[in-house]
Image (tube, rainbow, N blue to C red; front, top):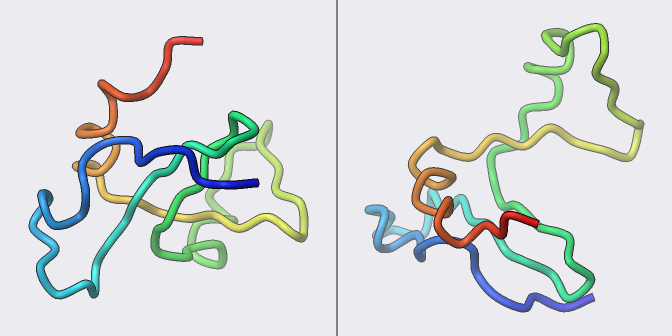
Length: 78
């Protein structure tokens, strides 16, 4: 599995000049997406709605609103 492209703009264009806060979204060669974000499983897991589930090997990752909004134009419709 390889990164095909970034979805959205680079972190620097969203104001990250230090490299400390760099949420990012990438499209992978198999069509899946990889996300770099703040790990928040322990914090958010208890808040999941009753019809949501998380496997033991899955983590909840938070990205900034700006990261997703600025990626919107690059996210395919299908």
